[in-house]
Amino acid sequence: MSEVLNRVVEYSGKNPYACYQCGTCSAVCPMVRFMDIPPHRAIRLLQIGAGALVLSSNTIWICVSCMRCVDRCPRDVAPGVVFEALRLITLRQGIDKLKYEEIPNIEEAPTLAIVSASRKLTG
Image (cartoon, rainbow, N blue to C red; front, side, top):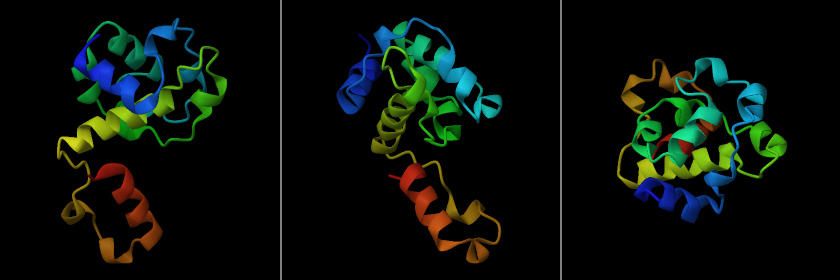
């Protein structure tokens, strides 16, 4: 197993090798059209040792953690939980995905939105 996959299993408790590529996760994802790699393909990339490609994609950051994929996955791979683990791997490397100075009119944004984004996108 690759280092990325080992850490995903450790952080998420899920086994990406259980996925048989049915595509249900991608079919139910409300954000799939904005992702550069659909959820089922991201899981496949993890299976074949291309975790670095998944970590560098926008898919794990576009995921809104609605967990529809978790509810519908017939193999309990739970892509949404796996994506949370992948975000955690990136954030623990000190790579923040949110730059406050790049948010236009941040002073007008709802506080809850800023807190929520900070929790998901910063270490």
